[in-house]
Length: 112
Image: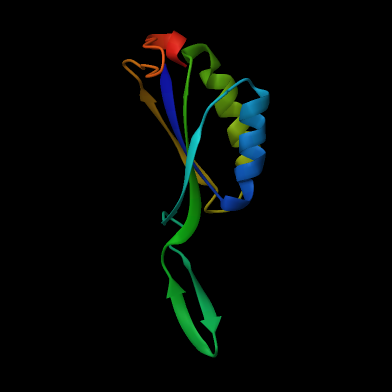
């Protein structure tokens, strides 16, 4: 099993969620976050005052999936989320040692 932490622009969330659902992924978690990378934020003018905004809003989606789905999901998420501009996001991939469904006690792949 693999865990994906997908950090994307907020405007891409619905597209990514719908694509993952269409691919048969039945569960995901997401959280609204703020951060920066190479983009380093931007400047805004508010009531005549220039302000530097260092941390930009992003969405972090967490998904645990079977190993055989990894490349398909990665290709789909990257192609949907890519605008070609700095700030499109990142995907982090981790191994998952085990999973337990609390309600039934199922473990491993059955728990997904």
